[in-house]
Amino acid sequence: MKLQRDMNLTLIFISHDLSVVKHISHKILVIYLGNFVEMAEKNELFDNHLHPYSKALISAVPVADPKREKEKK
Image 1 (cartoon, helix red, strand yellow):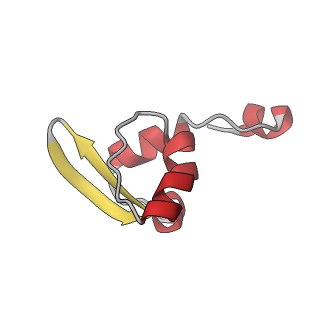
Image 2 (cartoon, rainbow, N blue to C red; image 1 turned 90 degrees about the horizontal axis):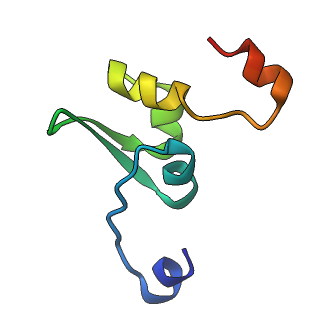
């Protein structure tokens, strides 16, 4: 993140871990079976995802609060 800021870099970061992706990204592109299925600003993607694969990835993000984690579907 410091390199991005200090050197005005654009980076491509590939991961299935959307908790990390959300932390370091401004925009997120979801790829499913080799196809681009959704692209959005990070908060928009987490708050209003459109594709079922995006929903699956977001639902896999662990919640730090054990009570809230148990309530997740």
